Length: 434
Image 1 (cartoon, rainbow, N blue to C red):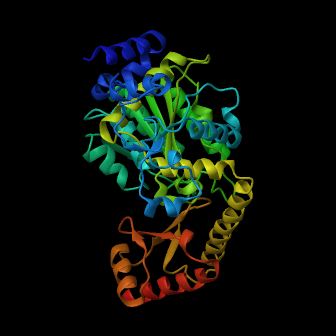
Image 2 (image 1 turned 135 degrees about the vertical axis):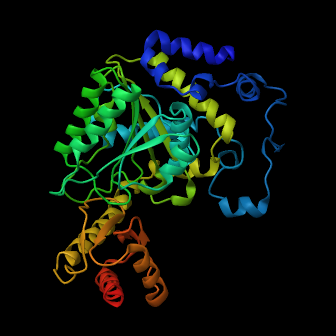
């Protein structure tokens, strides 16, 4: 093992050994090298005559660039676009995002957590979690209504065993008891669990109520108290898009500093929160279970995260980080976000109104939804994949089949006035097949 990795592991062993136990074999071996990037950072502050370190080309005291590119980006200083960004992300962006997390998550007030580290959006954050904490055969706990890419990221790439529980009770609430039962089984079998909490949920569009959220946190704490190490990951990709009765913040705030055997990991990003999908700008944030500020643990996790970023992709794109900084600093930012939120909320509520009309009751029911981008129909008579193909071929309407009975509808990309026609066409498709 590299001495730098051992040094980080020693920090964890001294200040929270349970976090060290949570790490995968790869996670234990990760470190941030004192190589080119470290030497270049030192030179940036001291090399006042010539700096012949970092591998970029310079000209006229700044980065070299092509005018045909810079002309399109003339509102930005070339130094904020063309050079490499720091491996953990631009410091100003990390600080602004932390301030945003505190502002939008009241449960984080008074809690101790790391500075957010920039990732190449949410999927990259999930990959980092898998690298840091998943060994082959480890259990990942998820609801049965899940984003399919989890299987690829955690199962195919890392060998995790995905343990599913029913998402909803018969009455329509989030199935806390089923979640707790699977978590207890994993605790008894493995002594370690990775829990992935994706709210608003993709594909169902559901976020738990405050009471359900508290019950999820209580279940995690109870199992941790029994001696199980738990990595509790909140995938907050659709954070902020809460339309009706639900939690209005991430469970990360309630999980932070909860118990020494619980490591809370928050994955979020500008991707959907700020409607900049192609920017690929996300964040990973850690909070361990100590009630006091545990800087050594946060330092070790940050260095290991920077190590895997360095190893896999070197660093994240610079221009998109600059663009997000400009947005967060803009006086119009909050007002413009609220305007788009109201558009999204209108589409969600219109969808529910149309579905509650009663005219489609013979063809489907629908799963609870109150947030996010999506909702799911539960078909009564036809196969979802057959219906999907039929709708596409005959009517030019696209939807996603997620199981034999479930059809996911992204109301996020349908104008409110077109939602009634959309469901009329889907209903006609069901009639065609029956």
